[in-house]
Every structure is written in C-alpha cells, then in structure tokens.
Amino acid sequence: MRRRAAVAAAAGVVGAAAAAGPLLDRYAARVEARMNPVTPGPWPAPSERALALHAALRIADLHADSLLFGRDLLRRSSVGHVDVPRMQAGNLALEVFSMPTKTPKHMNYEHNTDETDDVIALALAKRWPRATWRSLTARALHFAARAERFAARSDGALRIIRTRGDLAAFLAERAERPSLTAAVLSIEGAHALDDDPANVDVVFDAGVRMISPTHFFDTAFGGSAHGMEQGGLTAKGREMISRMEARGMVLDLAHASAATIDDALSMATRPVVASHTGVKGVCDNSRNLSDEHLTGIAATGGVVGIGFWDVATGGREPEWIARSVGYAVERIGPEHVGLGSDWDGAVEVPFDAANLAILTDQLLRVGLDEASIRLVMGENALRVLAEALPA
Ligand SMILES: [Zn+2]
Image (cartoon, rainbow, N blue to C red; front, side):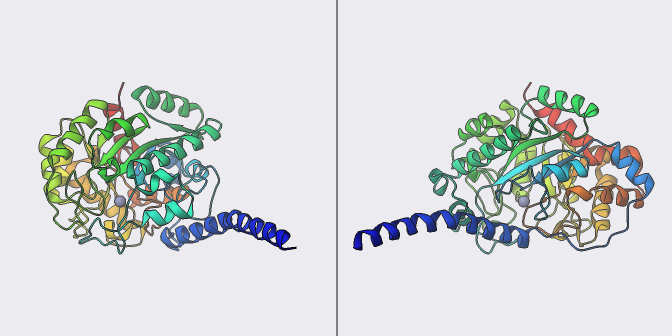
C-alpha cells in the first residue's frame, strides 16, 4: 500500500511538471496579450488608391520583437502584432526580428540600471536551455535557433536572409510568389555579447546581421538613452563596430545615448540605421532623435525607422506615424526614412502587420508622393541591407 502510494506520488510529481508546461505557456500568452495590444479603432478605411499602391510595394520593417515570447510565428494569432500569416495578409515582405536578451525591472525611458533581469522569468516559464539562465549570448543563440526552426517548418514561406545573394534571390522569387516572407535577425542591446566583442563572430555565425550597442541600460559597449550614465562608445564598443563592419552587419543606433550616437557616427564607414525611433521635432522626449542626429544618420547613407507607438510618434492614432514620417522626409529626404514598427516590443500600436495598408493610406493623406512612399515603406531598408550584408 505504502509502496503504491509512493509510486502514485512520484507519478503525480512527473504529471504536475508535464501539466505545468501548458499552464505556463498560457500564462506567457496572457502576459504577451497584455504587453502588445492593438489600439481599438476604427481608423479610416484605406482608399482604393492606397490599397492598389500598397499591393504594389516591396515592404520591409526594421524592428519587431516577435521572437521573444515564443509564439508560433507560422500560425495566425490574435495575440501580439506579427506572424507569417499576418505578414502575408499585410504584404510585408521582410521583417527584422530582433532579440531583446535582458530588460530591467520597472523599465522606464529615463534611467535604468543593469542590475535586474525580467527576461529570466520568461526563460524559466518557457523552459529555455539551461545556458540561457546565465549567458545572454546563449539567449541570442536560442532566439536564432527558434527563427531557424520556423524557417525550416515553413515550407519555404519564411526565409532567413544572411547574404546579399539571399536577399536578391528572395526578392526575385517574391515577385512571382507574393506570399513569400523573409526575416533578418538582429540583437537589441550588445549586452547579448556577454561583454566580449569577439562574440560578434559567434552571433554572426548564428545568422545575426544587425546589433545595437544598448537597449534600456548602459552596457560594456556604450551608453543608453535610458541608462544611468548615458556615456559614449567604449573601447569595446568601437571594437564591436569594427568587427561588425568587417563581417557585413548593420549598426543600429536605436536606444543609444546622444554621446554614443555622436561617437558611432564619427567612426562608421558603412550606412547605419536607427531601427525604431521617433523624431524630437514632432515628439520631444529622451527616446527620440534630434534633427542633428537625423542628418548624421542620413549622411552615412542610412535609414531612420519611424516607430508606430505613441512615445515615438506623439499619439495613438495612425496619423501620428505619418506625421513623424513626413517630418523626417522633410528634414533628410525620402531616401533616408523607413519603418521601425517595434511590433511585439511591449508597445501598443494602432494596427498589426495584417493591417499595414492603413499606413500607406495615411502617408497619402499627409501628402507624400507615391515614389516617396515606395522608398519609406521598404526600398530604403532593402537598399541598406543590400549594401551592408556580406556577399
Ligand atoms: Zn526597442
């Protein structure tokens, strides 16, 4: 009897652990739904002209955090903002999927330390490999492997772009098969390199093609716009950028402190981006770019990706995104402005990837011409990638 009870108890423990998996998954989905909502409209329906133009565009977005929560990106979800079916519905050809490997508790836009780690809760709840508990590089490799598995299971519907050749082949094939989608992998915050610039090579080999020196706190590589010191690039930061340029990776200045942006612009020899940001000229806060930095990024041949959420643009309605795009186009020309949605990045946005035609419509409404809209919606981002990626 006692023995049977012991066996039953052991079976219960194993059963509880197995049962906890789906429970934790549901918990993670609930957290994601709360963190990544869509602002309820209704917004004005896109005009016939906007829909026709939108269907003819090659669209690329410079930043989404959709790999973080572990949702199956091959299935259409009502949670969050991006998955492959919604990319297909919204005619979004290419998404830069970014990896935030560590975020501070009580994250705010003013001052954060690196002492706390909110991502560890997700690592435990979603049963990530043990190495990810301590190593942020291991977390990046975990995200890259997840993207790889999506691509492998997608029957060719999702490609990971690693080279210029990959990009050219993808665009040529997509002209025939518009349901094809592509991913470029990026890292949000160089703390993901575990403080070692040599790890640029490790993440490059895993497919990463874009890195920002910082996310919400200062790192061994540079100061964050939301850090404690907000200093400039360090020696390690300079070494990281040199290694990135040598390998064919794009430097991303989103979330960087003003001093880090200045330092990076003075040393960059390749086009740089600010993958997801706003402009101080429309919405003045610590998060957004000054006119001087807009000009500096344009001077490298790079692109400023305009974000879709209210802190970037100044409001919750889609017209605010178009206003910020319009401002940036006026300052630095249509060749240097792009999309930086920050979809699935713990932000509320007015539309998900499936409803991206709302933005094309809004860009027409603020008076942008079709040639400029074509550049902003994707051609600029594709140009920078084609120039930067390895042969
Ligand atoms: Zn971000």
